[in-house]
Image 1: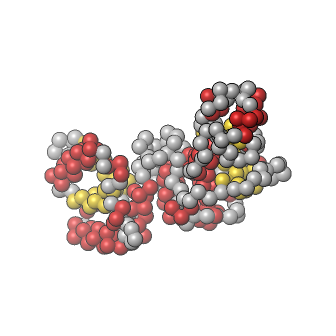
Image 2 (image 1 turned 180 degrees about the vertical axis):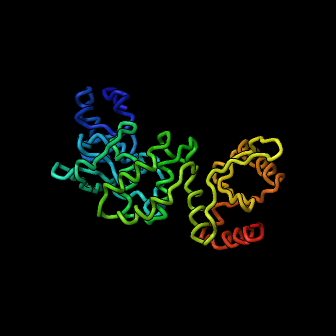
Image 3 (image 1 turned 30 degrees about the vertical axis):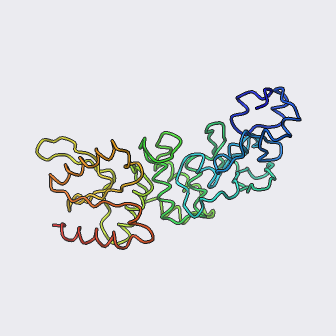
Length: 308
């Protein structure tokens, strides 16, 4: 690393002009010591992921510009739909009538300035969570928008990959952004998704499970339902999903459950649930790929058998 580049600049993408002002030499900045992800920018390593590329590009953003689209989701740590989860172009928002970045690998969306609500996350300007959600309306299905909306309004500290403590917005704030969206692209999908968003969800797959269950014609389960011992009143744990009327619990075994301590706690929780008469239906990712039909059929049979 060139001694002329302070550590604060070397940690992410930095402007060549800022490095020169800090004492770096042009020779080193032109040489192989640094990656050149964008014209006028250097970084210690070549950025690979969408998040790394956004961090490298961030110094080029003007004060009235911010990241949007799937780039904003990556910065916020919100679930990007798998079909959009390639590297792709960086996505930038700019207000109508003001300059926009003209760079290869960067797509710009214009938005009226009153709607351009920005946050700053780790030095990167990004669309606020409600705006980031609304912007995906034209590219996502209502199901995907519910998954994303659940992630935005969840207060769970352990929501996978989210990079800010939640909730990032309330359901009321999502209603407000939809009301302001008018007839813009994606408005109808946003309106369809909004009534199905629930608080307290702890992972994208929990949302998938809930929506698949309802869309298969079964009653909507409770989300993160508290289960108490009917004899002692002791809290036995929370169920990912629960059909309380039938005494059926649905649990998704994601990668967070593979930790040895969590695995032990899960086994004890399931034993406690079964001891008080609950039936636990567990699922892994293999139950949903390529199709959840078999798992849903088995759950439907359990619910029919146990429904009073």
